[in-house]
Image (cartoon, rainbow, N blue to C red; front, top):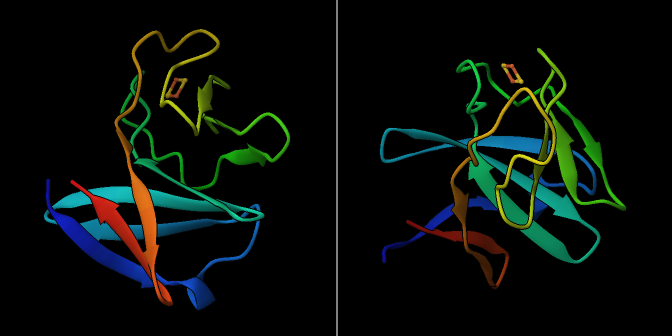
Length: 103
Ligand code: FES
């Protein structure tokens, strides 16, 4: 696994989405309070970016803006139709002020 710093804590705010490009992959980084999540940016249903999807902070989900599938930020799992396949989920850690993703 490669640990790659992708942004700083100052780039994030709770409930918002930060898009980062890492080794040719577009990844969404989401902060909810003191937790950090990273998932691939493309919906598994029709290759639409989840970037503008609505975050549910209490359920830890993001809603696809195209057809409304909910994806778990914790596991990447597709929780509602029409998507049935998960999106990739990446482990996130902090290194000082840096947000680090494992690829
Ligand atoms: S493109 Fe995301 S649910 Fe259809």
